[in-house]
Length: 444
Ligand code: HEC
Ligand code: HEC
Ligand code: HEC
Ligand code: HEC
Ligand code: HEC
Ligand code: HEC
Image 1: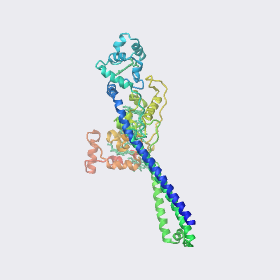
Image 2: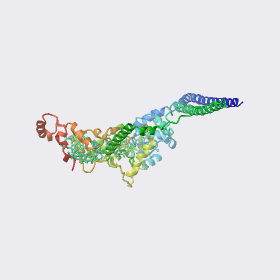
Image 3: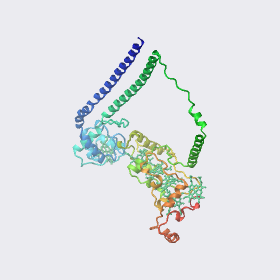
Image 4: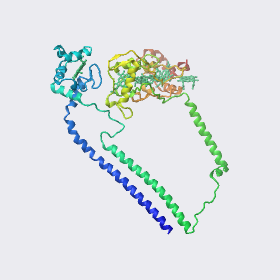
C-alpha cells in the first residue's frame, strides 16, 4: 500500500514538471510569433516618411551652405533654425535666404529687428538657391528633433534582435528550472529507493573508515620536502616580481577631469600630436596644451556628431565633456563670448620619471627622429590616455643599444661620426656607442 502512495507522488511531480515546461515553451514561441510582424509594420511606415523625402536633400544643402553659421538646435553665428517655418512666413523666408541684405534695406520690420539683434552680422546671400532648394532646406529645419539613438539596445534598427535576446533568456531560464527540478527529482528518487530497500530489509552499505588524505601526506617525508621547495620557489618568484614593479607605473590610466579622447582627436580627426604638444620638438618637456589651444577649434565645435557616439559613451556624454571645457575657460556658447569666469583644469600627470633622471623630448623627437608612438604606444587609438612603456632604466638602455643614430644631413655629427666610426670600425652607430650608456647623460 505504502509503495503505491510513493509511486503516485513521483508521477504527480513528473506530470507537474511537464506542464511547467509546456507553458514555458508556449510562451517563448508566442514571443517569437509576436516579433515577426514587426518588420512588416516598419515597412508600412516607410512610404509615409518618403513624403518628407526632400528633407534629406535639404540636409545636404544645409550642411554645405548654412552649417558654418547655423545649427538646428543651438545658437551659433546665426540663430537656431529648427522650427523657423513656424515663426516666420514662407515668402519672407525665401526672400531672406536669397538676399537678406536686400530685405533689410527694403525696411522690412522683422528683418531689421533680427539683424540688429545679431549685432548687424551680415548673412551671406544665396541667389543661387532655387525655390525648391529652399523648400528642401526648410523641410529639413521642420523635422522634429530626433532622440539620440540608444546604443545600449543594440537592436533598435532591426527590431528582431532584442526580441530574440528575450526569448533566449526565457529558454535559458527554463533550462535552469528544468535542471533544478531534475536535482530535486534525483533526491526524491534516491529517498524512495532507500525506503523501498529498507522496507524489504536490505541495509545500505556503510563506508569503511579510511585515514584522511592529509595525514597520509604528512607521513610521506619526500612529498613534504618537494612541496616545501615548490612553495619557496613560487614565493621567491612573486616577491621578485613585486619588487621589480615598485615605482613602475606601466598601464597607469587615471580618470581625467575632462574626458579628453586622443582617439577622437589624434585618430578620427587626424590632428597632429605636435599641434597640441608643440614643445616636444624644441624642449625637454612635451607639455600639456593650454585651454586656449582647445578653443581654437571648440569655439565652433560645441557638440559631437551623432556618429561619434559609441556604446560606451553617448553623444550626450561627449557634449557634456565639451561643456566642462567651456565652464573651465568661461565661454558662454549661447552668447558666443567669454564671461571672464575661469577655473583651471587639473590634468592628472601620467608619465613621471624620478627627479634624478634627465630625459629630453627634443633630443629624441627632433634630433633622433623617434616617433611619439615608439615610446607612447598607439596614442591615436586611446579613448583613455595611459602609460604605454615601463620607463625603467632597462627600457631606456635597451633602446639605446638597438637604435642607430641618424647621421645623414646633421653637420653636428660629421666629425664625431668620422672618429667614432673609425673606433668601432663600422659606418652605423647606435645611441649607446654615441655615449647613450654613460651614467652622467641620464643622471644629474
Ligand atoms: C555667414 C554666416 C551665415 C550663413 C552662411 C548663413 N546664415 Fe542665416 N543668418 C546668419 C545671421 C548672422 C543671422 C541673424 C540675422 C543677421 O544678423 O543677419 C541669420 C539669420 C537667418 C534666418 C532668420 C532666422 C530667424 O530666426 O528669423 C534664417 C531663416 C537663416 N538665417 C537661414 C539661413 C540658411 C537657410 C542658410 C543656408 C542656405 C544660412 N542662413 C546661411 C548668418 C548666416
Ligand atoms: C587636441 C590636442 C591634443 C592632441 C592633438 C594630442 N594630445 Fe596628447 N594630450 C592632450 C591633453 C589635453 C592631455 C592631458 C589629458 C590626458 O592625459 O588625457 C594629453 C596627454 C598626453 C600624454 C600623457 C601626458 C602625461 O600626463 O603623462 C601623452 C603621452 C600624449 N598626450 C601624447 C600624444 C601623442 C603621441 C599625440 C599624437 C598621436 C597626442 N598626444 C595628440 C592633448 C592633445
Ligand atoms: C584642431 C581642432 C581641435 C582642437 C585643438 C581640440 N579639439 Fe576637441 N574636438 C575636435 C573635434 C573635431 C571633435 C569631435 C567632433 C565630432 O566628433 O563631431 C572634438 C571633440 C571633443 C570632445 C568630445 C569628445 C571627447 O574627446 O571626449 C571633447 C571633450 C574635446 N573635444 C575637448 C578638447 C580639449 C580639452 C581640447 C584641448 C586640449 C581640445 N578638445 C582641442 C577638435 C579639436
Ligand atoms: C624616447 C621616448 C619618447 C618619445 C619618442 C616621446 N616621448 Fe613623450 N615622454 C617620454 C618620457 C620618458 C616621458 C616622461 C618624462 C618625465 O617624466 O620627465 C614623456 C612624457 C610625455 C608627456 C607628459 C608631459 C611631459 O612633458 O613630461 C607628454 C605630453 C608626451 N610625453 C608627449 C609626447 C609626444 C607628443 C611625443 C612625439 C612628438 C613624444 N612624447 C615622444 C618618452 C618619449
Ligand atoms: C625608442 C628608443 C629610445 C628610448 C626608449 C630612449 N631613448 Fe634616449 N636616445 C635614443 C636615440 C636614438 C638617441 C640618439 C639621439 C642623437 O643624439 O642623435 C638618444 C639619446 C639620448 C640622450 C643623449 C645621449 C648623448 O649621447 O648625448 C639621452 C640623455 C637620452 N637619450 C636619455 C634617455 C632616457 C633617460 C630614456 C628613458 C627614460 C631614453 N633616452 C629612452 C633613443 C631612445
Ligand atoms: C639612458 C639613460 C640612463 C643611463 C645611461 C643610466 N641610467 Fe640609471 N636610471 C635611468 C632611469 C630612467 C632610471 C629610473 C628607473 C625607474 O624609475 O624605475 C634610472 C635609475 C637608476 C638608479 C635607481 C634605481 C632605482 O630602481 O630606483 C640607479 C642607482 C641608477 N639608475 C644608476 C645608474 C648608473 C650607475 C649608470 C651608469 C652605469 C646609469 N644609471 C645609467 C636611466 C639611465
